[in-house]
Image (tube, rainbow, N blue to C red; front, side, top):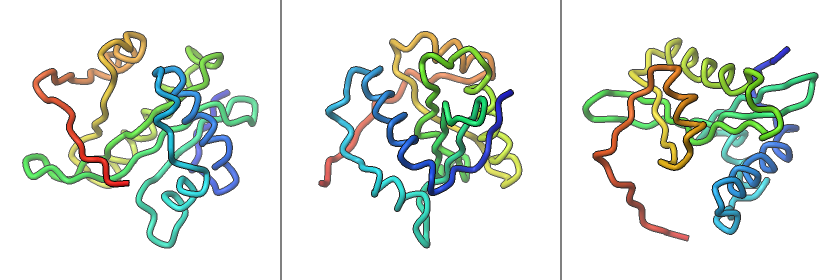
Length: 149
């Protein structure tokens, strides 16, 4: 049975390993510069900048969702899903569904206006998964950023 719970400090090592696995899946492991320490600070500092849940199967963490708040001047407060990760060998067992449902439930409880995220255009399994939630996809925007560090 799948159990979703708030992430704990003791989960950080496993969560970081999941992040590295995702980067490998997306063919960009060299892009991961965040460490267990920075992840711990983001989630458990006095003023955390993110919230996370883990999904357990047989009392072992096999997936996670990490989110933070964004503000849309058009829509209001948005819960941004930074990553939804399930170990490859544990996919198709309801962990991803349970994690996304947790994010949506949290946003509803807080009266946020939406949950949003990005998905790579080549990640067909993820796109098909999100379609089950009636997700909307926007091809009209281009991602942009400036590296600071």
